[in-house]
Length: 336
Image 1 (cartoon, rainbow, N blue to C red):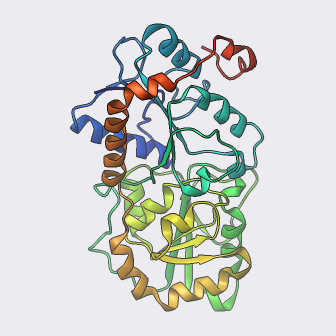
Image 2 (tube, rainbow, N blue to C red; image 1 turned 45 degrees about the vertical axis):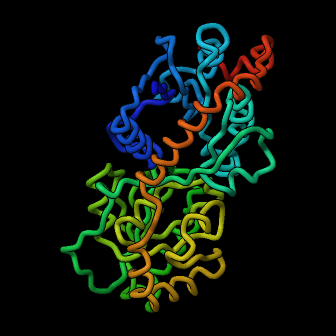
């Protein structure tokens, strides 16, 4: 099978989605897929839209080029759109419109979480939910490191948007001023910080990539994520596969990904939840060993979906209805 990705892998820190794409690429190559980063061939079977922004630094080709490809060059190619964003995630006002517009040319849509799919945004068309997974060959516990208290909390994000949970991370930073917590916990943040944002007590580390990231995560006890309206994160998967029980916000996708593998919290009851995960640490430490969201499972689901779509190609192409005036209303988003 020949598949084209509209986004390229970056060989540097660039967020969990980048590591996910690297893992998916490796898996599909092992399955004897042919992977292209352009639309020059006239026999591509699947085109996977990973990000519709034509100015994205990793962009291989735009939505406009995909439209022209399936309209005029190869109408037999099936277009799959993986949606992992929304305006609710970062309080933006353009992403939902861009995603909905770009989704017009998709024959099938993949959502990275049920919460995202259930938002009242999307057209009623063929779709599925495939949860993200991380690479167990990269993210795994450091078995040689026995960690005594204090309990070391850690979080990491590539994005420096405040909705990634910086209200929670600030609260942890403030807890470290109190006599109750200053000798009981430590907190490390890995990644970029919002402009003019500073921690007083937390340890801050610049973004790390793959093995270096995994090694640093493994040097902690508990993974905490305060991200708001997360569509389907990768960061919590990476922390969990490194053996860290999850302290996760009751928001977005997290209950679907994390339930049973740690303790959830609302902002108001964060201290109670922190106490709970510490008091029951051995229990959750044992549970996290069975965390299910790894890249092999995710990639197998993508592989099966692609195979099923090809089997249904005749029906899919018959139902496709792309109008010639498609560009008139959305030319802003579909630059070459």
